[in-house]
Image 1 (tube, rainbow, N blue to C red):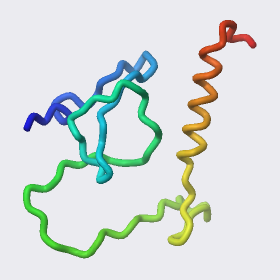
Image 2 (image 1 turned 90 degrees about the vertical axis):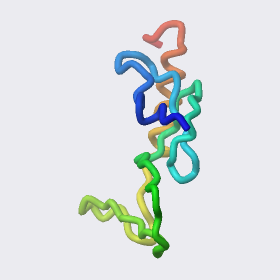
Image 3 (image 1 turned 120 degrees about the vertical axis):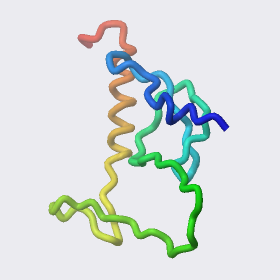
Length: 101
């Protein structure tokens, strides 16, 4: 199987609107398919699967709190819906015929 994702992970120019992305499966692993749209916000880190995996207990989630008291083990602060909504609003603004509106 070709590992195109790891050979060429960056698809878009840093100076243009992101127009495509690599598809990732539910486990965050690349499927080697390119999707022709901007990726929705998700905080994931694609890591290659190990060649051999030992049976072990499920990995615990880390609580990223930064000392501000926003997240606990029971309830975690998730900014992704806000970021996705903001992106939609910026896209709507960009689509206006007169950006000064």
